[in-house]
Length: 204
Image (cartoon, rainbow, N blue to C red; front, side):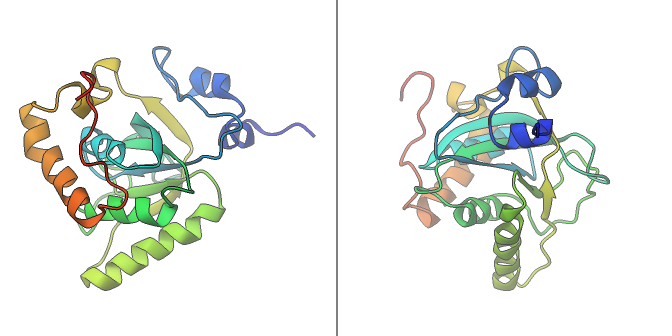
């Protein structure tokens, strides 16, 4: 029996389908065929920030910045990233915790909004663990958490000039004001998985 296009996408066997249907021609998700990796999507604020946060973590092999889409009513395009990671180095729970603590997860947002707070799953088995991370964070904070767990249905890459926003020039005022504090937080509270410095295009 032939696999559906979505099954092929989730298993990482059809990068050409992804490039044709979701990514802009200039850029596509590079899928690691045969590698022991997993994928999750994250959104909740400016994707420049979200990209910079996940690029600072050990075990994350790739971060694709762009716009993500889920099922209705969250079928509008929202800013987000796709994170490819090695579960033997960093797990879904830790990635989810980092995400919940580096954006305003307790702020109410419309599921149709550009900055909806969400964890986007690639496999049904990921849902429960993501929900547990959200529940744990809500219990600890004593606040209502508005982060959704949604199945990823589409991805569209950002313009090339915005890719690797922090890495290309960490001295930008936006990076200093918004991304650096998040990276400092990760290094303090997730030191076991955080790089001491984020590599830039200049190799720093």
